[in-house]
Image 1 (cartoon, rainbow, N blue to C red):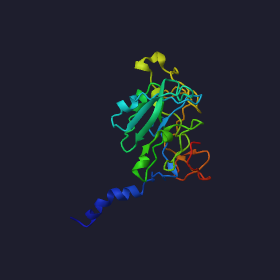
Image 2: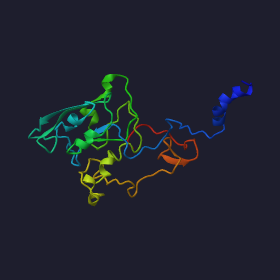
Image 3: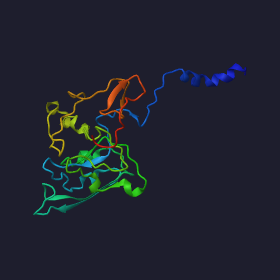
Image 4: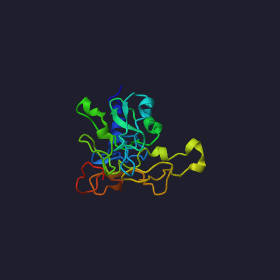
Length: 236
């Protein structure tokens, strides 16, 4: 073995040093999320403020990870919680088990449970990983609860479970683009989502989203985020 062959092992490393860096400056820069990302769940309300969950427990029954616990109760006659006879009295999701398969969303007959695009949340103890109904249910404005260990960014609450509105029932193209779901508090009736729905935001290839600017901007070919005041957690 010659002396020069010793440096042959550094060939790949030396080649990479001459190339443009593609490192994302996380968390100041974040890769744009797809509209159909499966993230943290929310329990929705109707536009009149009533809860959509009817306590049927179908989501818990279909969950392959056995991470959902639901118990229904009869609606009070003088102050009903949901439009049906029953409502979700107890609702818990254990995120130490959840695999974000979205089967609970598909099984729900009232579109009560959907998934946001938030996946950046961590816990300091196991108890925080079990989300209760108080944490999952949207507020009086229809927005998801913003918990201390969650990193909400602008747009994470949009296009919730968009895959459900992107396909036609049983593959019948005649239903494509037709609204077949109820409105949600704070958002109204969400628009149908196609493969490339009109008005869909598609970032340019190779672009980066800067979360330090307000509002966030797209830049191309630069790893330096746009200047501006830091943006804290929130749903925008």
